Every structure is written in structure tokens, then in C-alpha cells.
Length: 377
Image (cartoon, rainbow, N blue to C red; front, side):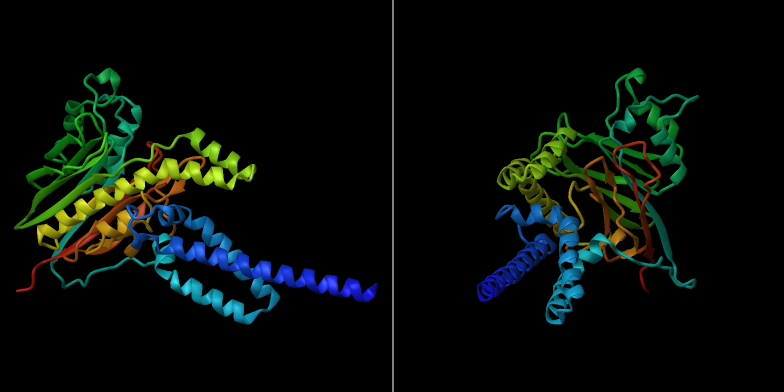
């Protein structure tokens, strides 16, 4: 009997050990696929994009598995886990950058440009009057940014319904003498540029979407021209009940139904991001200058195909100079950084941050200070 029990225990122990190895391998594969999802086009497959969206969860799972092997003292497995984390370093540093503020040399000549990007959600759906200014307009005024890109900034026809263009211009026009306002689509999201610099040209990207889109501008900054892109990529149109439904499926352990629900909701938007990002990236490449600034609501995370494609020849101000997660969109279920500021090689990012104290919209505004050195003689 003892011999039988000993053999049974050995079989069970062996099965558990191999199960742990399989779970470790599965978690590692999903984690690495999520970490490298920016390099896989969603038009080919959207599975990596979905994994990239859940990267923080995958990171926690990978960390838990790694800690298990560390506690068990399995040093070969610990070494393997260290290699896996090393292979995902670019994703980790994009999600959680740790930087110090850059300061240019006192003798270096150039221009400091403050940039603000803000999805205002129709200016918080609040009215504006001289005696009671709209909180978001107040915030914009207080930042004194040189270039302000606004998304979802729908303007009302009458003051009783919200902020009108006349009110916006009267309140901010002295500070921002150059203003452009237009819909991304015929009846779509409103994109607004507030600039201290003259606007030479304005072009709308021919993006196919029901409501989203992008606009690019040529600005005259002293004796130099720069390109500014204000974008609002395709929305996922997530609602509270969507999140509640996903949580319920997790509780019920309905993995297949959860996969189908996520794929139905997210896959079309990921594919739209692919097409939209390719178009914007080509226009930036065609511009032929490194004096480019891209702002907006990407509706995608720091490790996404859309952000990587647009940022191919650019720098991400937050990744270069920001600190922490910098979540710009926080609801009861969805907590992500989907608002970004990018710049070309002609600029040096000095600092960047997401102002989570600004809660007037469902997005937090993102700031960046860029240094534009004078051309070398």
C-alpha cells in the first residue's frame, strides 16, 4: 500500500510540475506577444493588439510566475524570467517611463515651445459666461501653452447649450490670435487648434470614419515653418455596461465568450487604427522636415501599432521625459494612457506630464515642453 501511495504521489507531483511549466510557458508567450504587439499590423491579426491592450494584466501575471520560481529557488527558471523581462524592456519603459527633466545649455540659442493636448469632451458639457467661465477654457488660459490641440471640442450654436465659437474667441482670442476649428468629418468630432503662431495652411486627412479624423497645419514659428498634427483616431465607443459585461464573463469563467465579445468590440477599431496611422505617418514622411509635432487622442496605448507607426521617425515626449504611468483616460473600469504628444528630431523634449488633477473631462490633459534649437550656422 505504501509503495502504491508513493508511486501515486510521484505521478501527481510530476503532473503538477509539468502543469506549472506549461502555465509558465503560456503566460510568457502571451506576455511577450503583448509586449511586441506594436510591430504586428492589426490588419493581419488583432490578437496581439488585444494582448497589448491588456499588457498591465499580463505583466502582473508574468511577475507572479517569476516570483513563484524565485521563492522556490529554481534559479534556471529565474534566469529565464529575467531574459523575458529584458526582451520586453521597450514595452515596460513605454508604459512606465522614469526620467529627469532635460535642461538645455545656457549658451544654447533656441526657442521653448509649450504644447497642450486635451480631449475636452465637449468642454465638459458646461456653459460659459463672463461671470462664470467654462472650467476647461479657464484651464487652457491658465496653462499659457503656445500650441493647444483640442479634440472632441464640440461647439454649441447657442450659449444656453454650451460653449460657442464666439465665446471661445472672445475669452482666448487675445492669448491665441490664431484659431482653427473644424469637424474631423461632416458631422464628426470637432478639432480645434489654438496657436500663438500664425497658421499658414490647414489640411484635413481623408480618413474614412463616422466621427473621427485628423487635421494637419503649417505654422510659422519666427523664421521657421513647423507641421502640427491634431488627431482623434477611431473610438472604441466603450460604455460602462461593456466593462460590466466583460467582468461578468470573467467571473463566470466564460473564456471563449469573453474572447468573442472583446474581438467583436475591439477588432474593427484596431484595424481602423492601422489604416489611419499609416495615412498619417506617410504624410509626416512626405513633409520632409523634422520640425513636426503630433498631438491628440490616439485611442490606443503606448504599446500599440498606431502609436508606434506614427512615432516611427518621431520622439514620444512622455516616454522621453515623463514619469510614471501617466494615465490620461480613467473611468471605473478602463485606466490607460491614450493621449500622446510626439515631436520630430528638430525638437528636444524638455518635460512632459499628464495633469491628473484636471478632471473637467473624461480625459486628463497632456503637456509637453519642447526645445527648438536655432539652426547651426
